[in-house]
Length: 57
Length: 512
Image (cartoon, rainbow over all chains, first blue to last red; front, side, top):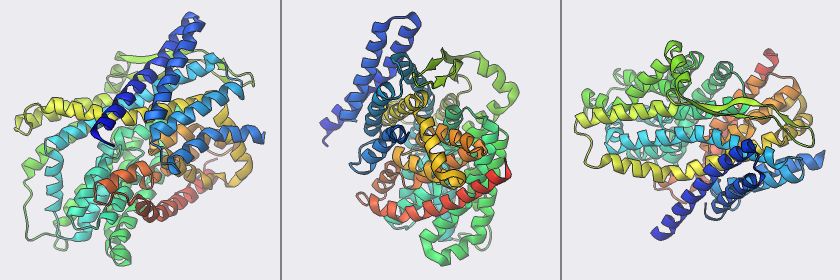
């Protein structure tokens, strides 16, 4: 893998890490406030992070 | 029942398969097994969206706890490496003795264990591999010895990350678990010393090294046990490795091992190079005192309460007032950062730091830590989804029914398997810690013994874990020969695992 490929992979992992590290908190505070929509939004955010890790990790 | 057991096994099986056959990274394989666990929890185990969401949140909190340690540990290592402190220490060891076997044991068994205590995450293998080749050890043997020599120190290494993960995942009392673990790891310590001698020079080296290994291995095991008994988990491996290095240092002064020619060690420079680690030892010991730790622990503590959740199949997760609390002032990661700061000031005072070193170290640390953090989060969140939806319990139930009274002999091999799959003792403990606890409860045997056996197996698995083997081969000019290193190490790993398993089985008979 070239330098550009390594850099792209690192950026994808950083974005994935950001999504995975914030998604569960969105879920937690949505459950605490009783907002069903944001529970699903938080789950989707976490799942997108995991998908990025799966594709580029 | 069998279908549900197989479904419970699927996330683990997928993780193993993806890491071993197509050789995916642990982050990638962890993400794949997370998807499988999520789908199964929702579709087959009756978990609703709230339970799944909260399980992920608990997994994230646990992952943050472990990742903070990873980042601080790598930062400290980068500071020592960039300032030349690691090279200074290595030169000191090389100049210490003229006996080739003693040099190999010093670097590949005691010093690598000390490094495992303070850094971990593959760093000891990366540092010691080239040092062994510089001592004249063949590249493949150098990679193998570095992997083998550090394995016993992994559980209490890396600021006791693996041990603390096991405590968090199982909810067992840390003091009891620490003492039993250190007994089994002590046996592994002596066994790895003998194995490293055999790997270096065959039976002759074992016979020649036996008195040295017995004396030093005994002293390191005892030190680890005493530090664990004193609840100084964070420095148990570091202290043991340090005692091992000091004992070899003392032996090197004897007529038999003394070096009469070559470079001399300058004690002052060696101590300065050592200053970050000396600071870490001092801080860790100070914080382990009850009158210091109690007020600090309650000063700033980050945690979240969790409500009770239950699946439609009847699996209940009790409400928790404070899950995975991070006490900022006493967290091992904070202690490491404080030591790094003190070390930086000392080294700067001695002009060992160049311009822009802080920025360079931070940049390297960020770049090195993203991948292991991702892997940790993926696997911890998978593990929590499995735990909270009752899958782990289902696995334990099936294994207990299948193996019956002989299960304790299998326990260490499950730890080895977990480490092989996840690349770390922490990953293994996260995956199988609760499984071992639940199996012990179902069989009516001592749960502390099986969890101690689990973490011992997890530590031993470090010598064959592909993620660590790659580190070893890439720094010893043996890249691409990972299969040969695994093949070399697997027999030692399984043999030592068998010995500790039998001891664990005897313990379960004695400690009802």
